[in-house]
Image 1 (cartoon, rainbow, N blue to C red):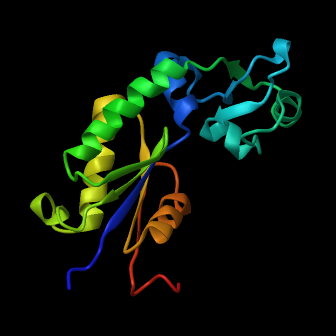
Image 2: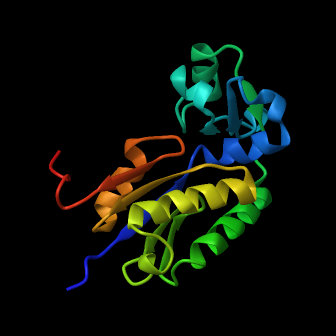
Image 3: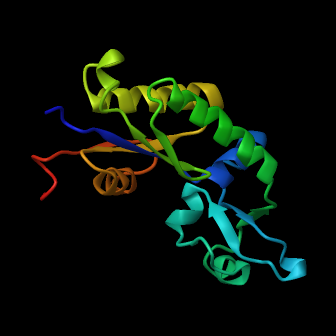
Length: 175
């Protein structure tokens, strides 16, 4: 019986990363995408890596985030832009399998059981190829979990970020 292979592809800090494509001068600063504090929708929707390192969390209020990170740069969301990048990225995934299951605007599972060997020497190599293609096409990074089921694939994409591939196999999942 053929071994099942599932990839979980997760865009890294998706909203913030998309916003930073238009603001490369802010890449090294702490940045968050948030609702409008004036209309009392002031929560953090996404943050970049420097803000994460200072403890800024998704869904916390802006005032809490600013207490942790006084120099936090706040950017408004551009949802149509996020949908545009979602479509580009999922089109890349569909080049490698017709079994793409979006989980959210920035996450998808790909069942590559019947297709990975058409493109690469291993499922993990295909994950690395996807990471490179998404980055080349969009400027965005993804983390990919590679495993024998969706749960472990999701754990793999969360295990090491940003821009990483993590293999959780039947041989190493207990570790």
